[in-house]
Length: 379
Picture 1 (tube, rainbow, N blue to C red):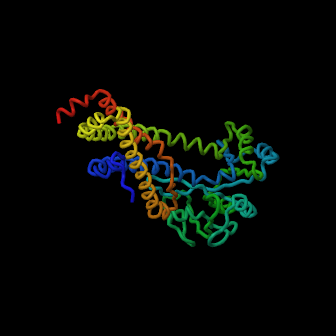
Picture 2: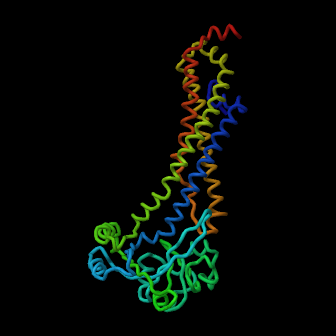
Picture 3: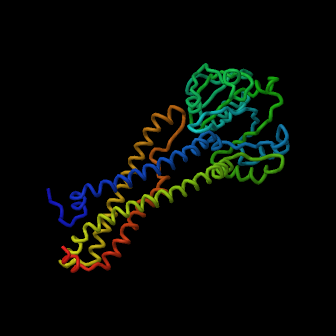
């Protein structure tokens, strides 16, 4: 095995483990902490999006004041070339507990003839159980919602089984759905005919022709937005999530700056102290003919390599923690955590950068002004 060069950066690390390891550990743990906070908060937005991802295959026209949408408007929507189908729904929402707080999931009230068509257009199929029967108190839910609620086939939701559910009657789970998006469905006919659910607000589901979802949404935004109706589509969902979480991300960014600044100052002081303890070494090297630029480059390599390695180790350790959380916490509850996410890098990249700049700048100033003769004579 070829021996390391005496002036190699890794030779310094090998000979000064007690100096290097604390700095590596602090940077790595700081990266893990920031990554964990950012990704867990981001998972809340991901979960909210997950529970509304049916908007990838459909859009909703919602009456603002009346119980239904004007027939003339529906006729105009149905006649548009980008629209494949428009059907009414009269469903409800059920709660789902999150790690913090709760979210509501929309269960669609579908007519008997519409159920197979909706499942096909949203690329969803029955994984367990069967399709619900028309005019019955049966419900089908996506697997993620079933896991989040801790349900099994034959279990009931609604009052009086669970008082937190808004439905005044019970519904029996007869089908578990799986596919591209999360869906829930009950019988339109049952809700329309039951006295406890009358009168029902009727929302219209609009499905695009294949490949025309964005074009259809643009048409709907221009057509149905008024004081009487509003559009709930993928774009509206994104705007709502952005508005809901932007303040939280701003707070995280402010805390990130404060924490990174404090920890960086501590690491910079450590690196400066370690450097001053090696001032005799650098004075001797300068006297032997090494230029100040070469000495600065050496310091830069030592600081940069340790900061980058520690930051990378922190990212890998974060992924390991996220994987454990996904398997043991998120997945059993029907949630998804983006294990190998690069989103937190926006908040963690400043850590090694601040350490490198904060350490190299003062050391460069010292090297630019120190007198090697005085240092050697002092020895």
